[in-house]
Image 1 (cartoon, rainbow, N blue to C red):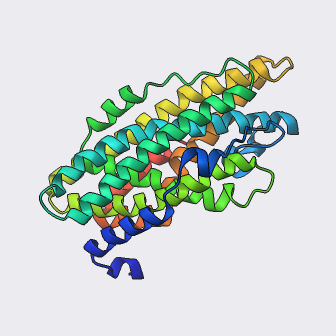
Image 2 (cartoon, one colour):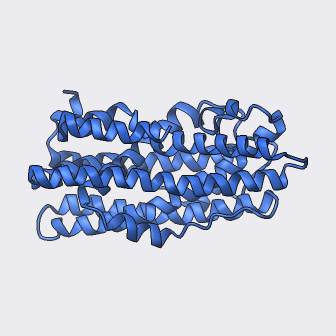
Length: 310
C-alpha cells in the first residue's frame, strides 16, 4: 500500500480542491499567450505518433504525420471530455446533501472539463489555420457521449480513469521531454496535465465509492460493458485512422500507391491504439485499481479483449 492509499477519502477530496485552486489557469493568458502554431516543429512526439512505424516516409513527412495526429489528439480529448463531464455532474448529485467538500471537488472537475473542451476547440481551429485544407474529424461528441453514458457507471468510470491516467503518462514520459516539439503544443498539454492529475484522483475515489454498492453479478456485467466501451473506442479510432491517413495521402505532395496508402493507414491505427487504449491499459496505477475491484477471471476477459486489438 502506498502513502496516498492511507489518506482518508475526505482528505483526498479536500486536497483536490486545494490543488485545483492553486493550479487554475486561463486559456488565453496562460496557455496560448498570443502565439500561433509553427509547422517547422512536430506536435506529437515520436513515442506517441509511432513515427518509426511509418517506414516509407521521409523526416518531413513524419513531421506532417505528427501534426495531423496532434490535431486529432486534441479532438479526441475534446470528444471524451464531453461524456466525462456529464458523468461527473451526475455523480455530484450523490453529494448534494452530504459531503460538501466532495461536491466542490466534482463541481471544479466539471468546470475544468468544460474549459478543456473550449481549449481543444481553439487548438483544432489554430492547427487548421496552418495545415492544408481537407482534414476531417466527423465523430459527433454528443452521439458518442450518449452511447457511452448508456453503459453502467462502473464501466464509464473505469474508462474515464484509464483516460485520465494515460493523459498524465503521455505528458510526463513523451511530450515534456521532447525538445523538438512545438512549444505551444507542449504548453497545451502541460496545463491540461496539471488539472487532469486531480481528476484521476477523483475518478479513483468515485469508482471505489460506486463499486462498494454493487453486487457481484452487477460488477460482472459492468466488466463486460467496460470491454464493450473499449471496443467502441477502437471503432472510433479505426474511422479516424482512415480519415487521417487519407488526408495525409492527399496533402503530402507526392504520389502514394495503394500498398503504401494501406501501410500508412495501418500505422495510423497502430499509433492511435497505442495512444488511446494500450498505453492506459498498461498504466501501473490503472492495473492496480482494476485488479483490486475484479476477479482473476474478469481480468482475463479484459486482457483477451485488449489482445484482440493489436
